[in-house]
Image (cartoon, rainbow, N blue to C red):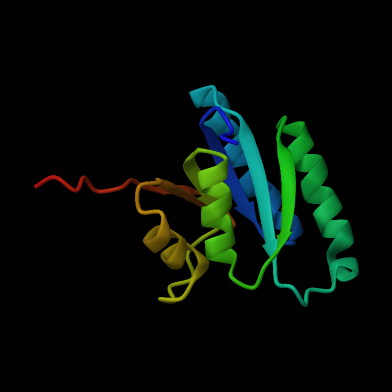
Length: 138
């Protein structure tokens, strides 16, 4: 069965209170582009969900304020899980926190898996940085 979904914006968050800034920025991007917003949190399979339930509830409420759904997945390969989810949701832009500089970081691996999706990053001071895909034509 093929799902006929409208293209969307995807906010990728972790179980931290301050990820609400990512949801807010993604909400503005989605609103400007007249696209639905989805919020995704991928947790390791051994994560103590109870220890971060208050943070996740805060993010869930923030997502609802942006008219977005929030999905929590338990998977030890967050970039792959997010890429699969982005495909399913026909994601046209991903919004996340900042790249940590490591070659194995979430954003580096996600970008390798989904190089066609533009990435917007929101730092702790709410500065926004975007990376657009480079055309494959030369």
